[in-house]
Length: 436
Image (cartoon, rainbow, N blue to C red; front, top):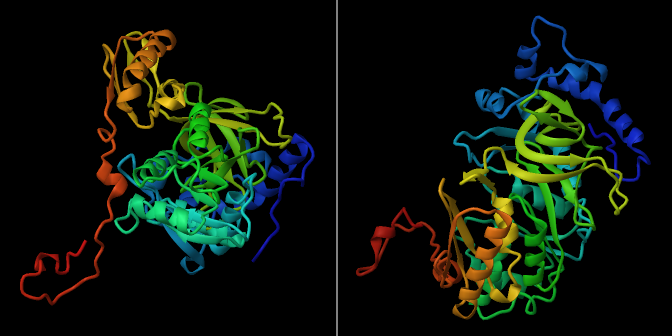
């Protein structure tokens, strides 16, 4: 059964926004108690049922989801499910997530809250996986909701190599794309390998949507510069929650606090707060199939309630990455975000697009690709920046293009065949059945 959901403009103050959250909490708590996990958690003791009770609710962890795989969190009949998903499993054990059709309306609406807008006139290339994760399906649902023409480009697929996606971008006059920041860089490199200029030869492209990796402001600016100054519009979310934050015109990520309650968890003290630095905790307010109460995403974030010049009356979040991604080099702490800022602060003319680093206890090793004409100067300037900003022993090496990302990955047109069982003499029948 459909129900109304809030939209920006339905509140005019933080107090009104908080009331929207509180008014929805009793329904959320009641729905959660229909799942085996929460029913068992509160068996034999008073269960939370009111907004005031929410203060005593414990965290739900990723391990809780793994332990109840696959349907231990299900709060509706299986017949009501529209889709089933699993996380990417980067920690080795995937988590299951499932959504009803009504849940999907909420998911698509949140994703579509892009400040540049998704229009019926748009051709929208979805360049993220359509596998068990939610990313490709989420963008497709939002694109269809807004009336756009969706091109299911997928990612990590033999059927859609980068060279083919460059052709699609140009020949279809694609106006919007959805992919992670690295894929934006890969598409640019593939375009150059095809003899095209990303900043000139794709005039229809008006914005690129991105997520799935922490993205510093300096890298976002560089990606925009590579593609001719178009907006690179970031969002933040997960397979378990869908989109939970979107970028405003000022370049800041705002939490969709009308559709979920967001809290910051301090693992040292065990306290939860509305703002500050710690782990992101999410309670979706419009989720039937798999309610989550105080779900600890385990992402390191910094949340602020300070007003933003854009005028959106929503808290802002800076995503710092997963816990445990900082490394000690010498006496200093090194993070990917800090290195990214230094690498992409090099002049664009140096054409540094791909890099990697290894944090040894005694020194930082960093390598990047650059053309021969700029390589030596780039090494010199990046070394000086590492010394100045981080003060750690380092070894920086400039490599020829193709060293980190092979040219084959940018130009290959892979041979994708259908299953075949009968071959003529002299043909390669080793491709029978196992045709990929």
